[in-house]
Length: 350
Length: 258
Image 1 (tube, helix red, strand yellow):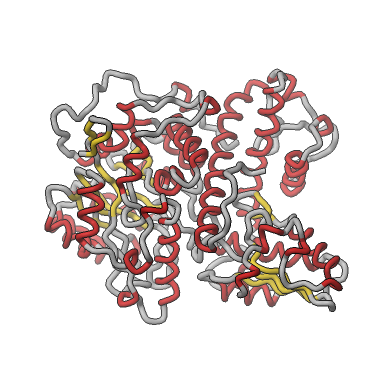
Image 2 (cartoon, rainbow over the protein chains, first blue to last red; image 1 turned 90 degrees about the horizontal axis):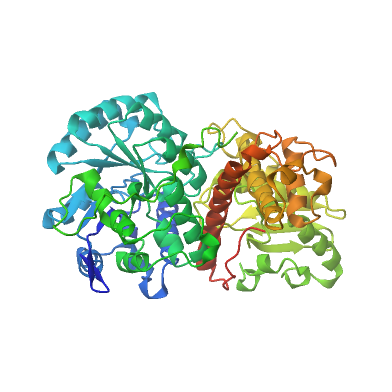
């Protein structure tokens, strides 16, 4: 529980990592990419409050102890969801693999959920691996990383034909939450790699699966919003939105939140700290205390305490079947902050 | 790179303060910097000078220009990087008195490929053979020009509404009736690049497709345009913050794209 001003909040952090990015894990010949990647993440940490910045050495190789303190003790996170990111072309043992995450998961099975991954380019071997991972770790979700390099290919899309057997396998295995990371723009080089049309396509075809778009499609929030409005099984993952904007660019944060509340709605937004990029504590604390800074934002839907409870934990709890302790839920009879006219976007880009 | 040159981009309005020049080439450097103001980050719709993407700009007495560019992260999109590099090269080449132009990106994961291709004057295909068939990235540029046009028109439109104009009055306006401002001029540039008429009697406000906006569509169009604008601004905000953190730059006030 996170406690603020005498009130307790149930927190599900839907986006956590336990990575290994030190020089000992860099692939020979690809050091510049491995270093560039973690340097880039480290710069993102710089967008949080100065007293939460870490030296690069710690940032590359933080420990289980750091994680337990930052996430569980200081952050008050009740349940955390691990998102795996492999990047084996750059990191010998992988950047943040399911095996790495599993070591911590084994210690805290009551507090952590382990998500797997798949890559359609792995074909039958990938399907077999997914089946094994699902059995071993009781997986309910996967992180899909469409920009990842793989044997000379620089990425893929959710609309690719080769994804179909993977969607079917997910349904068969009870994996219903697909977290989609859009970007960074590594591929396709000549198009817009943040394009979310492929999510639209997959979500329409697979209504029994949930698609959580991590980082709300940043930097293409507009495309994401138009799409999410029309697809009931598409959700907004707020990692980077809170961490990257709330402290560094508070006005833009307010606008982005206002737009998300208008187009997507508080029932479909999920808090994620993106730890170890940012510690959860300042994000949760700031978010609970947050309101629109001035009247300038008066035509956006308001966000009250109930809405914050949903975003901080209850929405994710619903998707993952997490039991919410007595008294920590909300009375759902109140209408959510969703406008009636948000579906008026069919011809939005025309 | 000398640390004294890292602030060059932010001082481009005052060309004399950009390191690398001598008094003899001062006027030429000023013209080069002036030309660079017209190079936009296509994704953010802001000039690269204002975004502080210029690390240094050296001009010799013979008219040889050496331009070093930087982006917020080493993983920034190669396609947009290429467009900015190629545009910078093109506008500087047009400045009278310029003999040669070298454009290079520092600290970028595809910097070698991009710099070599820019050096040869090759297109995007030349930088990434086998990975793209789109040599001039026109489709990408067009997509973002349309977004930028929507966002900028909406700002003009909102200020007219705030001044008391009705929806019918706003949508009846022509290009010739728009206030003469940097915002309007940028809209007209974008229209020209998209092949949308900028004639005095052309409609002032158009949909992303170029069709005239009609007053019934105004509320929804504005709502949508504001979202596009928020997206551009938030994206630009993150880019600025990252660049600032990585290069230890002085803080700028939080601002919207102007």
